[in-house]
Image (tube, rainbow, N blue to C red; front, side, top):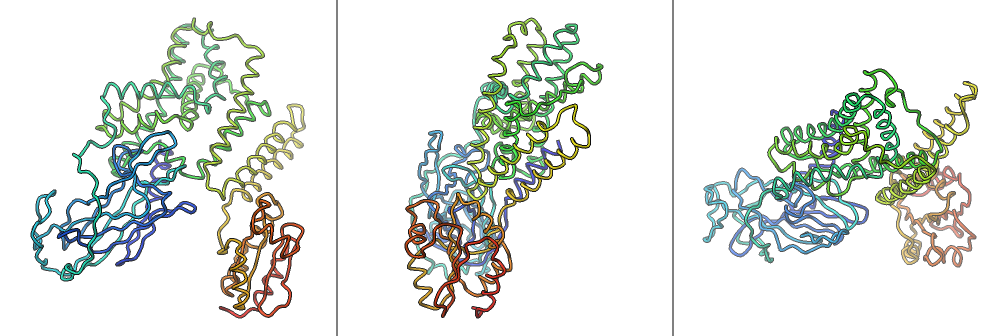
Length: 599
């Protein structure tokens, strides 16, 4: 329970930021690769109404949810809240939204690009009007003509492929009401005024509970849980050989293990709502690159298990061959494990059920979450209560081995799908590390057997573990962007050379392993990066991955180089550039950069 609470609370609030800014200073709200969105404040008038204009600027590929009804979870629509000790503000006026079609074909109301939200001042000498009324006559100047304004912006931003972590940013400004007549006029078509709707999906209770039960049933067919299904079936068969009372008891304890996991989810939901005023958002874990990498690598390992690269020896407590105490403990643990493995691959139906549950009173919401667990546990409870049903299961045979290996390919497919959801700069490293992990597991399980000497077995497994750790540090450690690389541009290079500015060109390619080594050993050194910045060197990363790239043509036709990696440094006043075709030239580059005058 503590593990679940820590993961979701820390993961959620680590993404929320605070940035108090002065007038007209733009604050970055969210950023993902080339997609970015920011906001700044300006005093403005909308018709005769003075107020604050919150101006959003960003790329068109980054979307904010405009309506609570179509946001992916409770409270994730775009919100603007204004606080001030000197003025009373009315309800924010949002512009008309646009319609975005998500990958599932659902129509969603969103804001994107540049748009403005207007928050009117509705205080007349510090006396507030009703919430939904705007003053018709011009406002009198408040007692304090200068006033501080704090604007809190929160919500969830998504691209066409992924959703980023929820955010909350704070902007601060000071406005002079005496200057309100000269504030800029703004105008836009406001969003349609609608009655305030209940937060969260408004399903009927019986329908929502049925949806929760169906969500639980669907967890039993998740690919992530398939690796433990043979162990579960083995347990059920073994239990059928016991007395009916013992079989039913063991089955109920297994179901209790499933319910225990969902009780942890319900507990985390209660803590978040009571102490933090927020909700447990199913799917947030997949917005963490670390979690996605872990799940992808776990699926690769499970696929190797399906292929028979290694086997898992089931303890006697799990296979129900031990005493009653250990047997019940094993059943409880196996149920908890099955629930853990099933939920990461769950369909959107689970997210919908959880969203409804967390919009209800705590008691009803907790019951709805437990109904999900009941749905998952129902098939096992039925099989153990009626052992005769086990006789209808297909008999073991070669088909089981073929099916098991086929599941391995499905797990690899899901692992690749998860890796493709990672940021571009992390995908390649995870793929390489997955290959190394597969090799290390093959070493661990395939190079030794029960007859191998203990000393030899220990040496082989230490080497396998050390290789996996080293590869993890090398491939999974995110490379810090130390150098402000520019894309290859012949005109930019020519202009810099004519102005006597030093130019460094690194010719590289995505398929070049030696280029990766150069990147790690030369351009990831902080002392080299600091000198490039200090000496105002134009750093060009020339991508030659494809034959029609401009850098590829220049490498052959302009610089007469046969291939990559190659780095070229143009020095002011030098007749010929300095070229490095090897891998270890960091010290030579550093020595040349030190001789250049500082910027």
